[in-house]
Image 1 (cartoon, one colour):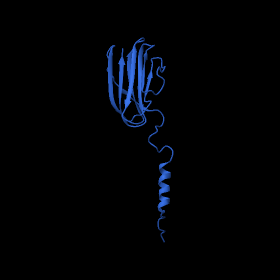
Image 2: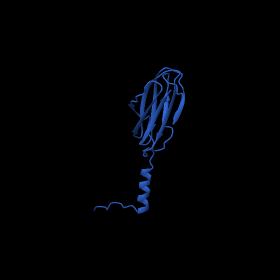
Image 3: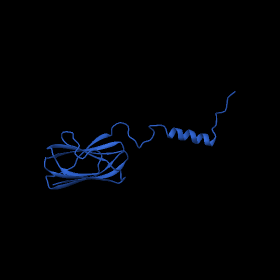
Image 4: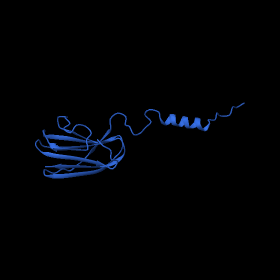
Length: 136
């Protein structure tokens, strides 16, 4: 004799659904480990100049820009995003130092090192951003 499949009451079914949805790691807003890097290009002419990149970035990725800059140059980095997500910009000097700290939206200053600077734009959500670099 076959037994009929067990049935759940509506409250029990809702509880099972919520328990499955709230399992740690199920939320897609948080990334596991480091963001996946994607190399990007930004055409920056000698000072004085301005370069702008408007891009779409997927969650859990980062866009890496590499710029050759000289000590003594004044530079401004400004990042805006449609999602209004904050702290998406990190700048690395050739030595690995972070002149702007970590996770900024705007930074300006006089560069202390000559060489390749890495500018990272990272996001936990899919969004569109605009990166503006002003070189003086």
